[in-house]
Image (tube, rainbow, N blue to C red; front, side, top):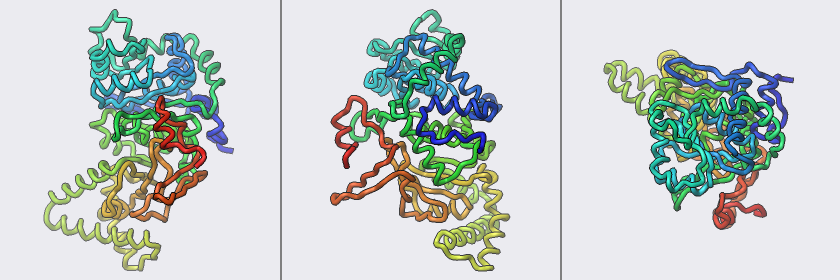
Length: 448
């Protein structure tokens, strides 16, 4: 049995799973975060220690089971420490987009009844100050970055993240272990906001089982090795990043890497060289466009050579995807293309170790799919909604058809009604929307 084997993760809560990982593989690297050009590692033992301190610190601030703790920050370790620490208490974490304007933040915090919020820095804190008078439920604001916060010294509404950890250090193990033991897999643990395209965003109520089932099921389709690297750079408030950074990572013991900033994400990706990757179509299209621009700026003979090698590689990928065996000449051309073009390109992009890549959130054009498969990137479509943890369907290896979204995950069922509605059923389907029974009844159909 592997040291990483924890059995059926859906029988645990997220804090319970973290505690198991820390007990079995304490020195394995769970997280990395780049700061000032240096990648800092967090082991599972460290991860658990921080989550324990957060839980005890929140407990000291009066947070109890069922209350809501909001997080509004970039992708940093403190986000997951706050999330798991709150969940250990039986509280519900709430993801807030860091790009939200002040009025949007006010709406989300008021609607979800948040009592504590972690705002990463001065920019996020200012959004709260703008509506402080209309946020009576917020008992404490925790800031992670102290720069610019000295002007709020003496204001008891604020506490630093470091102060929160110190507040919880004395009772860390006691509070976390006692409260986490009371958690059940079907407890609601996180609110993920819908897109709000038909009105104000709704908070989908996610349980531990919802998240960990999806993480485990994706690992069954596309096996991941413990320690495989993943770069977390999409908003953590989005279900797409929650499912990878929290659910897939803990269910499969992969290492989550946080970039130094949003602006450095692509260069940090090159340094990490992830084993799997998830991004919406705009990212894949942007990378392709940047590569084409660089090719166009090269000398004429080089441009012609690039086009020819890319054509050979794409032709071979088309044959492979259609189930045809490449001829000797086609195989030789692809070999030349690999060493002459695609391997150097993959190296420059940080894709040399990439075993699988996913796109979702919108449709990706067939030509873009062909381009990446021509480079040897095993890019797959995923399809899902916030209401089923972002992934319900995914392409299988060797069965990537560009005009489809793949097959349903293991343990799921799908049916198309006479009216053309797609009904998906699985352990990932959420309990409903917070304080929106009307919308829940329209979307979640337990007896369908």
